[in-house]
Each structure stands twice: as structure tokens, then as C-alpha cells.
Amino acid sequence: MSKVLAIALNTFKEAVRNKILYFLLIFALLIMGFSGVISDLSIAAPEKLIKDLGLASIDFFGFLIAVFVGVYLVYNELDKKTIYTIVSKPIDRYQFILGKYFGLLITIYVNMLIMSIFFFAVLYFRDATDFDKVMKAIYVEVSPGKWEPVGGGNPQVLYYMYHLKQFGLAILKGIATVFGYWEPLTHHLMRVIGMSALGLAIITAFAILYSTFSTPTLSAVFTFLTWVIGSLCEDILRYADRLAQKVGGVENLVGPDLMKYYFAQVAMHIVPNLALFDKRTEAIYGPWDVSTPNIHHVPIDWVSIVYGLVYIAGVLTLASMIFNRRNFK
Image 1 (spheres, one colour):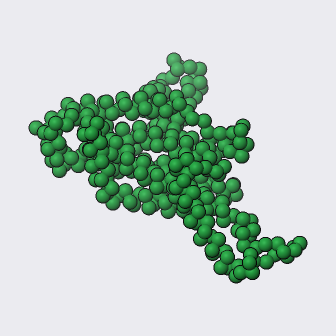
Image 2 (cartoon, one colour):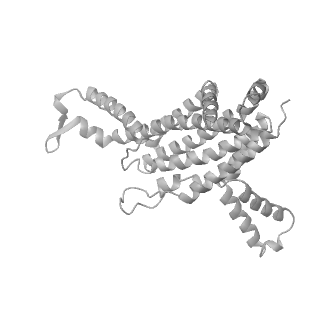
Image 3 (cartoon, one colour):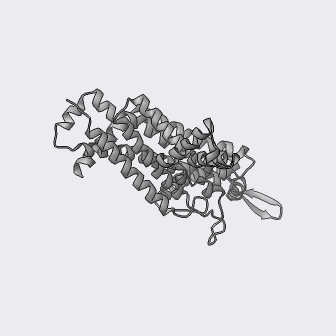
């Protein structure tokens, strides 16, 4: 275990030096920050747009990190010939694979943590700077229909001071939220991010698997296809069922339609169903919680969690077996 941890920490340090990582992180933060601006132009509730864009950004950019960083982890060791030094040491090859996997996972999760804090901060700040709340904070009603600045101060100064204060509070609340604090605005959102993190753990395992036997370019393509098919798994299966229903059953399918049907069936059983880990719809547009009517209900999906963990174990086992059979002499 100590060897796996040592490799994981070294992998994390190596990944942190990757400039692509910072580019993706900055781009994700810009999108989430921009969502707070364009939310005012939305016909729908502004917070729904911020939640949708924010959660999607965390998931998508986490995936990009898994692809652009993950596919090079094993390849770089081979390209720089450092793999010969590693395999000559008393380290099992499965420990090397596990170390690389957990190192990449730490990298992804640290970035998800930063993005989550920023996402929650944007939500809190947007809510606190709502027009009505700002007016109530700056002005006080001295008589019916007559309003004056609080303490007789300059309204413009009070306006900027209020926003500055709320900005600081939003950051503090954002940090607290990832560690368990919540308000009705952010309740259950950490569950959504947690399930996304598990889905990314599966994709990361596939990125490591593909990197054990192919080039970085092919590994990236394979990982991307796995992510696309996995995300659309249920839609692909519904499409296949519709094809069969049109002709009165599977036995009546012929030609391209038959191939499409079997492709959908194979994809459903080989590629992970990543739609199970996407809880954004439930958190933003789902049914209300019975105990707290102003909060959307997002239950903990234990079946999907077990499914994900078993899938990760299987993929990493396969990656270790393939890597173990490679000859580095």
C-alpha cells in the first residue's frame, strides 16, 4: 500500500506541473463565473442556469483532465525509458497501475474541489446580490414611501461595500459547503458532484486501461468514445428497442437495422452506463423533497455506487493484467 501511495503522490506532483491542467481549470472557472452574468438574461430562474452550467462544467472539465493527463501517464514512462527503472525495483506492476490511477484521481478531485468551491461561491454571491436584497441592505424606509441610505451614507459606497462583503462571504460559504455546510440553494448539490466524481473515476480507469496498450492519441479517442457511448447508453438502448418495435420484433430486423440493434446491446453490456451518475436533472428540475418543500429531492443511489465501484475494480484488474504481460526487455 505504501508503494501505491508513493507512486500516486509522485503522479500527482507530475500532473500538477502539466500546463494543460491549469488551462482547463481556468477555462472552467471562467465559464462558471460567466454563468453568473448571463443568468440575468435567462427567462428561467437564474439560479437554475447557474446550477446547470456549473455542474456541467465540473463534470466535463474533470473528464478533459482525465483524458489529456491520463493518456500520457503510462506512455511518458515508456517514452522516457523510466519504466525500466521502475520494473527493476521490488514493485509489482499492478501497484504501478494502481499508483498511476489514484494519482490521476487525486489530481482530478483536487481540481473538482476548486471548481466546486468557485461554483458554490458564484451561487451564493448571485443570490445575495439579488436586486431586492441589495436595496434592502442599502436603504431603510423612514416613512411610508420614503427611503434613505442606511446611516445617511453614500449609496454608491454602500453598494460597493455590500458587494465586497458578500463576495467574501460567498467564498467562505463555498469552502464550507464542500465540507458539509448547506443552504436550501445548495442542498443536495454535493451529492450530484459526488456521483459525477464516481463517474469520472470509471472514465479515469478506462483512460489508464487504454494507455497500457495504445498510443496517447488512440487512448484519448477510445476514452472519448467510452464517455460518449456511456453517457448515451440509455438513449442508444431506447433507439434499439424502437427499431425492433417498428418491425414487430427483433427477429424481423435485417441489414443495417439489425447491426444497429446488436451494437446497442453490446454497448449497453460492455460500456459503463454513465447516465446513472448524472444527477443534475434531479437536483435542478426534479421532484421536491417532502420534508423540505423548497429543496429538490436527490436520494443517495447505493445501487449505482456499488455498480461503479465494481466496474472500476474490473477495469483496473484488466489494465493490470495487460500491463503485466508487456515485455520491457
